[in-house]
Length: 359
Ligand code: OGA
Ligand code: NI
Image (cartoon, rainbow, N blue to C red):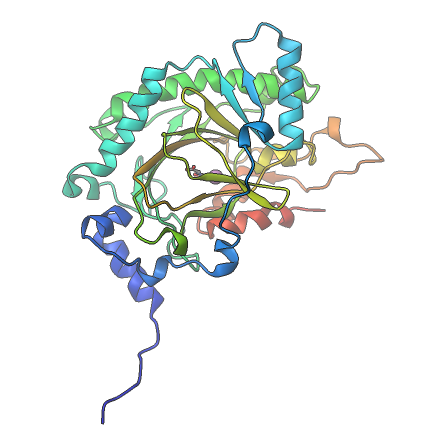
């Protein structure tokens, strides 16, 4: 008699076997799979409504010209964008087009190099200078995203040059030097937009440290069954995102997912949880995700500005607290907020993370 017993699905075994290949999602695609493994299949409530809203994101997301000489108008635009929607494009930001293109090429070279070389960087030890893996939260989340990432803290102090991947170390250094300057500019504008002294957020170290996340979203044979990265908010002060010509980023706007179309030469800036906390909810850390695509690979570089002074305390600033508007969050440290509650947690958990600090 033939047995009809189907063994129970052993997710952990599937995840482990995938992790041990150290070749990421790209390894699956290179092996020619036509159907995505079960560990990547997202539940319908996350996938739906998958269809993006039929709106032009350029009508919703403001573009801020950082080359404008009308500073008060720029500050006002940043204020409105950061309060109303939490995301904006920046143009004339000072980073040469050639540097942005080479950064995207460098990320692609890293992910597409000889897998034996790439494997040496594969780790889940966040203290390593370069952390390459697929899904930081692979062992904590219920479902995996269709992406591979390598990341390095590049400011205030980058890792020793020789520890960075050979195929992209020069451009990582160059792009990071550009981002250091841009970070100062943006945090000064946001400080002013909040009615603070221009150096206020910089003096709080908001612009001093960042990690570069170099994402690679391989072409996906069944994009309707998975996501590149599940809905989340960013656990930092601010993100500056460089995306290649293939889009995929979406923001949740009025309960609908809206495509954030790549605009050549521009960067996307979004407010993270810690600026929402500092501003006592005046600024919005918005929910976003990246869809999987049949076309690919898609490359993006997210710069996460986050103070590396892990013991420093952050809470709602006194300027945004009054008897009519009491603090909405308790104080936290980078150590507590990021190292205890973000690392080692599913990425979509951080939608609730700010809630946990609510008073
Ligand atoms: C992230 C992120 C979006 C993208 O890394 O936090 O939201 O388009 N990335 O890669
Ligand atoms: Ni994000």
